[in-house]
Figure 1 (cartoon, helix red, strand yellow):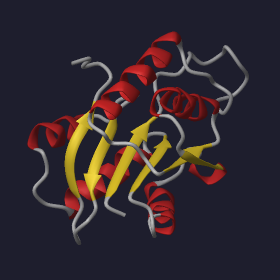
Figure 2 (cartoon, one colour):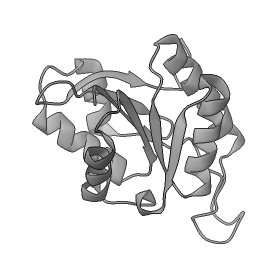
Figure 3 (cartoon, one colour):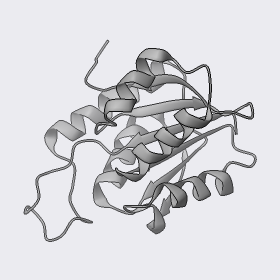
Amino acid sequence: MKTLLLIRHAKAASYGLVPGDHGRPLSDKGERQTQVLAQQMLAAKVIPDLMLVSSAMRTMQTCEGLLNVLGSVSVKNEEQLYLASAEKIENQIWLAGEGINTLAIIGHNPGIAMVTWNFLQAGTGHQQQAKTILQSAFKTGFAAQFDMSTSKPKLVHLFDPRNNN
């Protein structure tokens, strides 16, 4: 795998609109974030070959919003990515990475943030501004792009739908 995108689902609706957590949909703000994120990825020509997506409603809706702009991408819903630990997410990355050019994982905090932290610690040559932002918070709708083509992960870009430039 050459490129890895770690994506936290877009902004979800408040608790209480549906029973439990798993079925929470995106909020209107989250739907807008997803469209902006997809446009940013398209403009940067960062289009996944495969998206592994948590089975939660908000991650699946984030994926659908990306697909509406990015077009046809292979998608695999992964029940085990729902609220997964960093270790489980990393296992999915390494299992799926063979033969994939660009892999995207759409998941949840704290797991997505912890994988990012692990890769920041293990890697070198990171884009400094993106690294600084991610060390403080991995916000909803963020997508961290890592170059995985060498033995050490390298953060090369942070897509932020709040920054619509």
